Length: 206
Image (cartoon, rainbow, N blue to C red; front, side, top):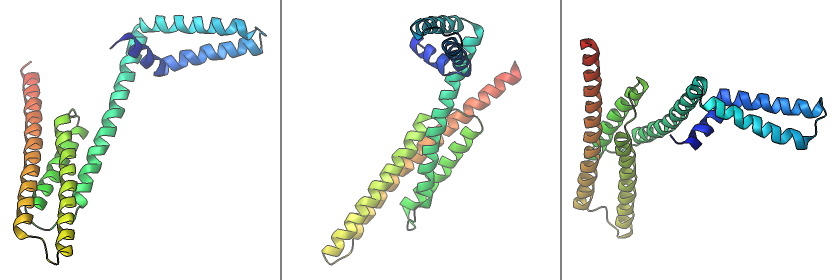
């Protein structure tokens, strides 16, 4: 973490905000009650604030505040990303698809996506590869539905329905890609479970 990020996180932390608030209050009181000219108060305020922040950066309390602020930012980012994953999973679950390989693959993806979200709630780390698989699957399904609708429109304009072979090929291709996403999520969840079991075994042996 570079010094710029450290200073920004410290200023955003409750400790940093408190220090800056006290300095600001002192400056305002000096102007209003002490009748000290603003031209004098302003540079003094800036110098005092800079000194306070530099001292805090090197103090245990300041270091703790920076770590806590970093954790807060990460938790907010994780919550936002996981919220997007949950929305994607919900959208997939609400699709009304005819029975077939595509629907079966989507149902599996919704299930394993739920397992992943449940694992994160229980304290497991986020897995970007799992999230990419779920979001990519949603894009694939959107493209599938778009192509299917286009085929239906072409069929109606031509006075005939969708060519069964073309539809079967599209269904098979889409289902195969979705099954790969399901397999990837399952594999990553399995790796997480193995890692958790290894950690638990190590703790028992120690």
